[in-house]
Length: 339
Image 1 (cartoon, helix red, strand yellow):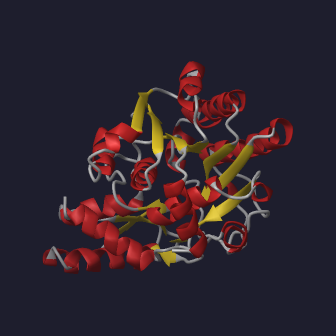
Image 2 (cartoon, one colour; image 1 turned 180 degrees about the vertical axis):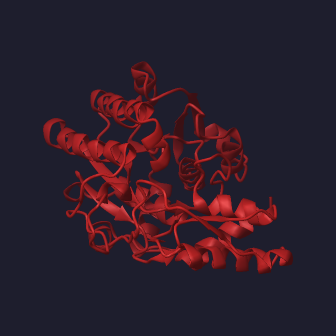
């Protein structure tokens, strides 16, 4: 955990704020809720429960008996302007996580991606502007790097997007920059690299690889690798992402109206990832120790390698990952295994 993160957490305890977390019932949103309540903040949550779950909220709030008093839930949709206006009323900071994810699903059905990830984003930024909310931290994605071959990925060197999902995230960054320049909003975009952790949904055709594989291993079912297993990702534990959001929310004004990578500056290939998951789970479920993955065709729109340069966010915001992939996976497997 970085020194600056420790400092700002202490400051927030002494000077609480009122936060809006969109997508609050999702796995990243609920992790943000959990930490903010832990720090004594007041939180407004917005979610339409298309991807989020009530169980995530119950789990995040269950640690504190008085948490419900600090939390107001709005069940609604960012595609609705009136809902956005209600949600931003009297808040100090917006942490915007609500979006539809999944590259393959966006290739199959692009329209909802634009409606949610671009129009919904615009609705929320307009509502924030009109309500006088300055700080607007939002989730972008490493997918905006598209076909740019360089590793590690550096913020000012992006390629062309390879999916509708990537295009929507790039549009968000462009709109945010314009709103910063034209209207004085203080947007900070966080390009997440393959986030994982507790409460990530293992179900559904487009579920993320880590919870899906944990669920498959626990059920004695095969884990499928698309391609030969050599493609690699910068897997980033959710607590690192929470820290990045709070650092961005409290950053000095000279560090806003830009985008930052949020990752670990590491790369793990899918064969390695499978082995780490299997070996962690074998400690509590010995029969999975001999499991082997199965391989199938690569997926359209998937990039072969991804790795975040974190030099910019470290220098500007004082970010330092508290968990590398080994520590994050150990906590994640333990969380799922306990349920």
